[in-house]
Image (cartoon, rainbow, N blue to C red; front, side, top):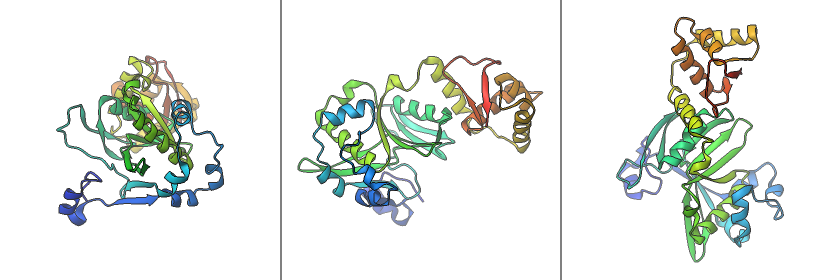
Length: 288
């Protein structure tokens, strides 16, 4: 199967059965299948947090018209809906991510940054880029939005993120209106929605550097002996130990390899460590 842009009808026609199918689902059906539909249909329910609440408050969202006619699109293989191969006026490319189960497409350094942060964030179990789109009535026609990043939390929550450089990217009123409608549709489907700016992704340059290093170690080979040593360390010393101590326990004769294993295990959510500060041999971590 070949992944191609979900709206590239010409390319899909040429590929025929080789193109990954795209599935469109009526949002009304998603609401019916939700565990607590009455809760999400409550008009008085708060629409989300922070910036999206402000967008929704300033916009007259015609829920009665939008929700029954809205459709959600996903690729049948849970891969990206929107793909590209360069030839864009801004930075773009692919990045291999363990939590994305393969290559993740990105457009712009801010979107890439959010993918890298998610790869090293212990609270996130899975991440995808441009994996979901909404189509809904807007003004005299319809509009379609494909969203930048989707995350699945370890607690079962799902969140869709739209990544922007700064407030200027939200200057267009029609675009803000469309985002407010999308926020309400996602809320009623039990999916969180947020807009995140470039300078909100990482707390500092140190945080970004740490996240890049850990994401780069995601595919370090972890043998069975390393898993056994990890579990033995947790049994002997307890779940909480130091970064350097665990690296030495994993590979006593190769400390650099041991540190790379700790980083790979952090991506796999077997190790939890705070990446917002500078890392040292005595930085505490938790074994899971």
